[in-house]
Amino acid sequence: MTIVFLNGSLNPASTTRKLLEEVQTLLQKARYETDIINIGELDLPLFHPVRPAGAAADWLRERISSAEGLVVGSPEYHGSYSGALKNAIDYLDKDLLKGKPVGLLTSTGGLKGGINTLNGMRTVFRSLSAHAIPQQLAVSRKEYKDFILTEDCQKTLEQFVIGLDEALQHQAVAAHILLK
Image (cartoon, rainbow, N blue to C red; front, side, top):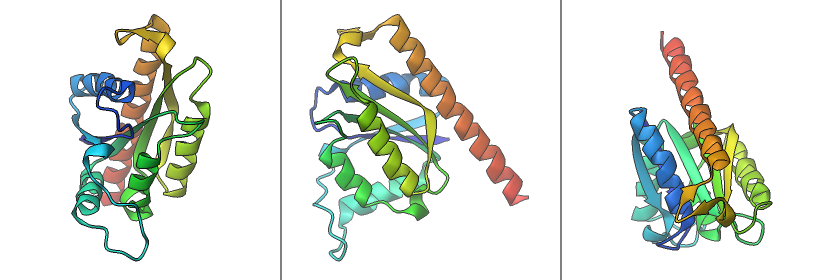
């Protein structure tokens, strides 16, 4: 099974990217194929509903269409997720995401941050008929040093991966039953 990661940070040294890589490592150990897409490298034009999408948007849709699940990460900007991520999501539709498990994570500046970012992403993915898993991950700068996560944060990350794995396995069983 393939899982596509969407990195909503434009910062090449982003903590969001590092967090996605931590999740990626655990999922690869569980024998998932993974692919991280850095939104900032796609050069997506600002979404416009009547203009042609272009090659970058077509490529993004194809990658997501072929994946069994997603992990979406964004830094917290002013209590929400990045505009670059929202722009990329605007190129997607329900047909691409219907029923797909989606894990949501954010990197934040403070210990209490992230919940609005996660809730915002959850709302958008629900409106696209995706299955945003209940497990989520918000990591602040105070929960790691040189990107070594605290013990509690590492446990939350592991529960996040377990939740995504369970949702993907459930989806695979359901698809098998429907195909009979």
